[in-house]
Length: 171
Image (cartoon, rainbow, N blue to C red; front, side, top):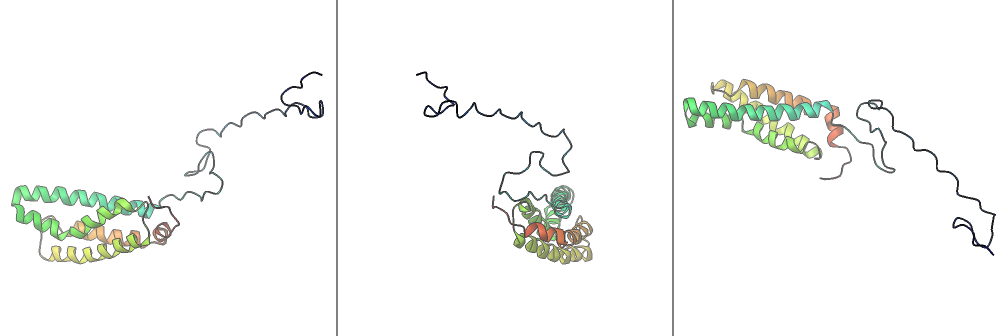
């Protein structure tokens, strides 16, 4: 008796033929054919769809971080020109904006509490900025006032609320 090939059952020779041919690999779609933000190869089974950060939240991050940089640069420049007391006035009148800027680094993975905290701090910063405008603080006032209003507006939108209340995995 001859030995059957490895893909055949020795008890039933000839009943099971060779394995079916393997289909050729499917090539991915050409570059740029997937819609913006979609994965070309799709998602793994059972994975939730990927959400992109909405433009209002990205804009709020940019506004907060750019303003924090401007506040620090302005405080250093005024500190060199007018002394440390004037630099302290600039930092003091914009302190809550610096806190919101540090919180904005967690906008990608934090929950709704961070959004509400940022809105409250930015609302309080509006009053600090109005006080700085009334006191004629050098380098403080109008720019923190406008950016704080922008932050409250951007983070109060429904798309920002949807982003911060989405189901997420803590990083």
